[in-house]
Length: 457
Image (cartoon, rainbow, N blue to C red; front, side, top):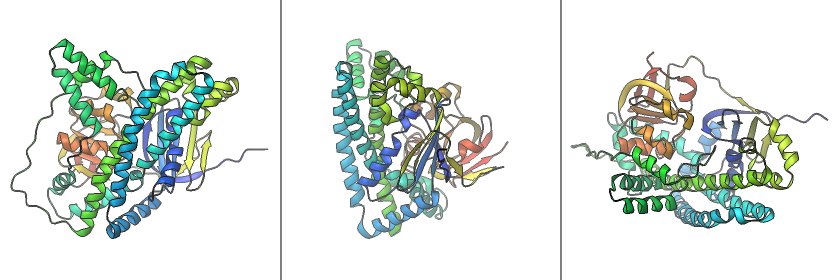
């Protein structure tokens, strides 16, 4: 019997650097998100290429837009208490998750195969639940950020700068806390005190270098290298003589939504990094016990871990052939497929100008550098436009020397937007196509007042 091949038509959204093992759990995250939240994922898919360690994300853009504006109408009627409760809950659960992970980490090598499999199952259930709780912002953030940006754009000049000020809160992200500690380590002259600070960093931020592709174990030398890359951020004063903008009722609701979204996003990212770090420590144990190389083992779907321990030969035969997979949530069912199962709804050709959401004001012309993952970090040069799918904490040294930042994904409270506003450099997020239509060396104009990127040559 010939196996039925599924095919889905969707909108290309963005991409992520990562492995099949690290990324395949996203389907369970989405399932948990739809169980725990009132804001639902209608469709989500990835095509993951093991050789490139890259994934392409796919959505149903119109369905997301409908769900986003339904949530806005709900919030206009009922306020943002729902998001505030999610924000509080995900913060508490992430703190507990950190404790669980820190307690479990040193015990892994002592567990029997059976106990290791059981611990992995319990851990992954908790990880997917917490990540799922915070994942709801993915559904609405792009469309509502774009809507708020367009509303402010009608006010004329400096709208993006006003928007940045209004969205600013006193919330301190875990990335900012990490940066503060690294700066303290860099500036400390006494060796004993410096080592204490390093030990504190290793205890609190051992997970900071984790990605969906790998999770290097951080040591004292690694912390010192990270600290050496950090620079004290220049303080910028607010522009004087700026008249306050009177917000409409809808704009007030949008601002409130996005302010809570910043917290949810940040705590979700922290849980994500902790979870990735632990997943790869579990994988290390599996490789030691089974004899499967890490290069092959990273081709596993997340739920195949137990097979790696107890049905090694059969799984190994499958993994040796596996190179490209699709994972799909169609609104009702999940699919783990051994081929590229998504067809683009729309193919863009001959693009010379495109739009995104302006997240940090300014205008600059400079050459492009595409950075899809850590392997591209070394080629990035000061004064270039950082073009990427989305940024993460490891991108910070690049962001600090960039002339501007342009991303495929994200909204006004994404990592790239927040850091760009702190750095006072132009930033446009949520373009969806930047990494597809631009190439290294392109001279572009980034107009982060109006949200346009223009290819000049």
